[in-house]
Image (cartoon, rainbow, N blue to C red; front, top):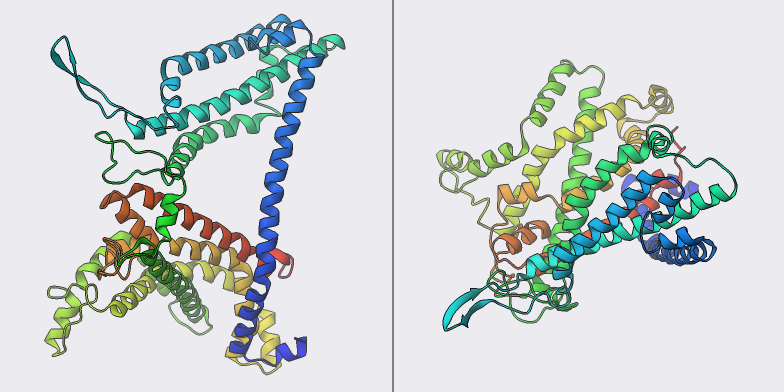
Length: 498
């Protein structure tokens, strides 16, 4: 389409053209995404191959003590005068060996089966003696922990060989071999970033990576009733869990429920994101408009609204919407109207209710975010538009909206993804009600995938199904974020509004 034709379109036609263009470019974006993903794994594989090659070269060129450090960590450093560093490497090797011998090996040896013994009683010398069985959950958790520690140890082991070969090279060239104190001083100078990042990386590994890997692996097991430890064992089942998630066989099947809730989750995320965004922007424009009195008062009122904890607002609204005792229904009854079951009645009523309540909760945040941006739009743009005969609507569509979308595109993407996983609004307001007998146990018309996942975990104890759905939601959210952002003007033309 030529530029002159595009300019002549009305705002709705332009929106339609942009949506059409977005979906037209989507296959190419998907192709680029998968190519980028393939290149990442290709570079990773090449890096691993290069590391093995360097590992072999160091051994071939190393002297006796360097070669010895391949068996006894720290030997090469200690032989060249770095006694403290060599001792640290040696103690790490001994510590890992002790961990593996007294703890890790027991769990890693059972990792392939996740346990074979349920325990019970054995008769020894004619007397029943209770025998502890295997705990599949602990085997999986400690097995993952052992694997992660093994990977960390291998990194330290390779670092030991590099260090041994480095000090060998320094000695052969007659250069100064740094002492332990000199190397430690580097961590307060040129390597200070390593010092600052070490504790956060340790905490992320302990409290994020380990549970995340554990959760991902649960999706490939039979960890659901009746296979619940410690009384029963669960085992690996490959991709069977994912096949059941997509299966539509039977009445209230997992696959049917997954598709229905995915459709509602997308509708909810679109409404919750863009209605809040547009209406919040409109209110912000009204507050910032010239001639509006008591601007500070209106801004303060919205800030106070944000200051109230969200869960308090949602729980209060839940009580106000109750059928017989809620304030809204009592008011309707007193006015002579029929009561409305906002939560457990018609599905469309419940869905509209959660969208409207989310507007009440979310619009103040949008107002605060957009107010600051609106103040930074150059006033001469509006003055020029007024001189050219543009009215308020044209100024909004030609200046305000393009500028806002350009600046806030990353915010819109993150808000959309957070709304897909917006647990609080749904769970605290309706708890997924009204229930639907055609959906898998516990699912309701207003349930999002994330609230259904919570119910699968806490109520039904279908841990493997919940883990599989969590993985699918993550893949969808990550893909949408990367693809959508790379298709936007914010990523392609960063300097457009500078």
